[in-house]
Length: 154
Image 1 (cartoon, rainbow, N blue to C red):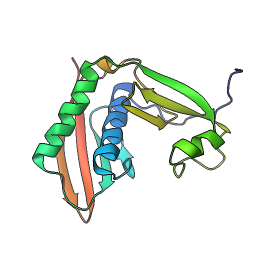
Image 2 (tube, rainbow, N blue to C red):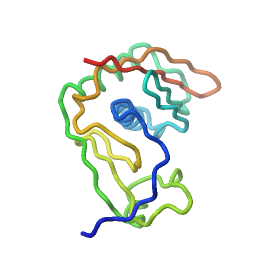
Image 3 (cartoon, helix red, strand yellow):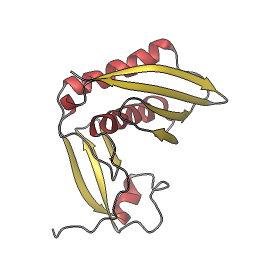
């Protein structure tokens, strides 16, 4: 396959935090059927994700999410990428956040069998590079569940 021509990405995320965001997003979508975060702010020191939910998450649910992400981190899962055309991507992914004028070839980031997502950002090579994942706070207001998280480097 020849080298795909992709649009330039204008953000340089902190790879460990961005990879942790993928794990949390994927698990939220699977467990609660809410889809991936509709709003995200991913930074080196702390990040936040917002989800539409009918009720607030319980402390046990938040602790379970934190435990899940840390289990995947500890499993030292490989992070890989694949390049596919937009037509194929439409069959597999929500394309609503793809920017207008995006290249015909898009990148899919896989974190083992735990998550796959269209993404133009930077990631770790293995989940063990992420560090310890910690949900530092959460709040629920007007149908929006916000989860704030941090990483403690090993």
